[in-house]
Image 1 (spheres, helix red, strand yellow):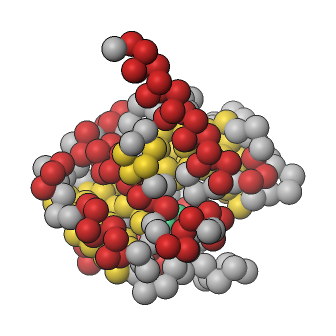
Image 2: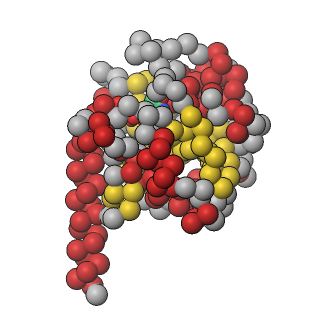
Image 3: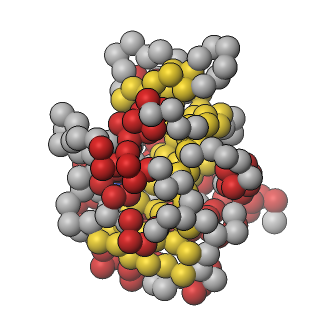
Length: 246
Ligand code: TTP
């Protein structure tokens, strides 16, 4: 399996912080979130990792380097414009080939890492595995509607006004080579981006096996100001607990 980390994007929700620097490099508990993502992928046994970069490419490359520090091999993939998560996948086809891969948004972290998730996907016949978690305010996220009996995915909706469930999509996805047909079939959304939710919906509609994994621990998406503050508070609490313990 390979890893793909998305570290391009606009970061408009974090302006003005992201005017000048990459949000993926903002430290949480003294460590850039992007380093935590590389470590989570490495700890799941994956050493071949691609990082999609945009305007902040130089900064990201300087911070992460070759990956030798983590005993992984990093390949950088330049995205000229932030045209969406599915676009980032599309431009990574040469790097990914027909391997199964995990795609991880560079501004997300989940409790417990992803080793269990990767093991489940690697030993399965799923074409895709998505990670869902219950949230209090589903209309702010991509949300999945599951069949109450089979627990299969019926549909995915972006920021629904009337959410069909409280299960939000976490920024970690696993795919096999079926994704290439999907990213080539979809069209840009109203916001001009190739949406990963549309690509996954395409897989569902075509009858591919898309497995919903429900994550129960914490999840931090630092792409939003309040989540970023929550992550800072969390890291502060952890570091002060640690220093009290020493
Ligand atoms: P988002 O948070 O969805 O988008 P964004 O970074 O452009 O932020 P905002 O909505 O505030 O303007 O992106 C999730 C992750 O994916 C983040 O690490 C940036 C990355 N990304 C890309 O690499 N390429 C893209 O085209 C997009 C949209 C995001």
